[in-house]
Length: 271
Image (cartoon, rainbow, N blue to C red; front, side, top):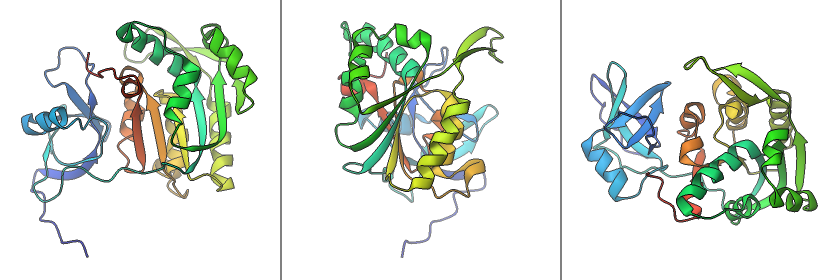
C-alpha cells in the first residue's frame, strides 16, 4: 500500500506535468507547461533539475501555486520528481501522420542540422521500436507539393493508407490574421472511433502537434468529453516548435509519451 501523502498546503495543488522549451518571447524561464489551460513556469530549483537531468518531456510530479497569469511549479518533497512514462515499446500500434505538421517540423530542424532531413526516414526512425500494423497518412495539396522524392517512396510503400484532405481559411482569434488549416474533422474522429472499437491496438502514435488532433487524442485516451471511452496509451511525435498549446496540455496525461524529433537527429531543442 502506498503511504499517504501530506496535504500539499493551503495554496498548492499536486499535478503531474511535462515541461517543454518555451518559445514565447520576452519570458525569463526557458521551460513551460500547461495546466487547466493556463501557463505553468518552474521555479529556479525545478528549472535547474529539468536542465541538468534532461527531463524535458518527462512526467514530473510537482506542486503548483496559482499566480495571476498562471502557475508556478516546484518539487513535491513527498514524492519522487519523475513519474513513470507510458511504455509502448514492442507493442502493436496504429499510426496517424499529419504530413503538414511533420514536414514543417523537419523544415525548421533542417536549418539547425544544415542538411535535408528525409520525411520518410524520420517516420521509421520514430517507429523503429514499435510493431506497426497501420499507417494512416493525412495530406493536402499544398503539403504534398513539398514532399518531392519522399512522396514517390510513400506512394510505393503499401503500409501507408493515404487520405487527401481539404484546406480551409480561418481567422486566428489572437492575431486576427487569416491562416490556412487542414479540414481534418470529417476524417479524424471516425478513424479514432473505429480504431478504439476494434481493440486490436495497444497504442496510437500521432505524428503531429496540431490542435486539430485535440478531440481525436481525447477520444483515444478516454479523457475530457470522451471519458466514457476505455482509454489507451498514445505517443505524440513532433518538434518543439510545432507543438500546440492544446496538445501540450494533452501531453501532460500519464498515458502519453512525448517524442521530440530533435532527439532523433541529435539536435538541441533549445535554440
